[in-house]
Image 1 (cartoon, rainbow, N blue to C red):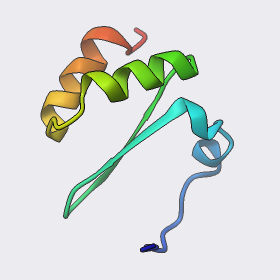
Image 2 (tube, helix red, strand yellow; image 1 turned 135 degrees about the vertical axis):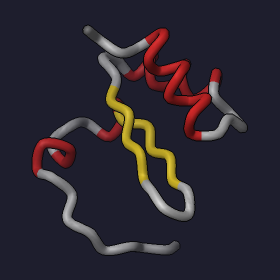
Image 3 (cartoon, rainbow, N blue to C red; image 1 turned 180 degrees about the horizontal axis):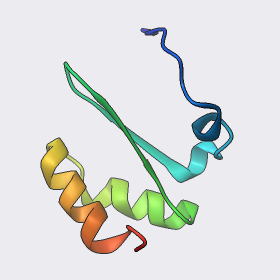
Image 4 (cartoon, rainbow, N blue to C red; image 1 turned 60 degrees about the vertical axis):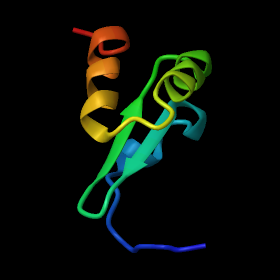
Length: 66
């Protein structure tokens, strides 16, 4: 296990982990938040192997609320 200490905003910590998808690269960490566990799992299945920009496009097109 590798842990990187940082300050995570309280609002993110309060969200159920089953509603969050986390992506990291060498210079950033992205957290996507979903309405349902099913949405989160579908997003994970749809974006396997994608890079950050591709995942962002899928999220914006299918899951982001206006």
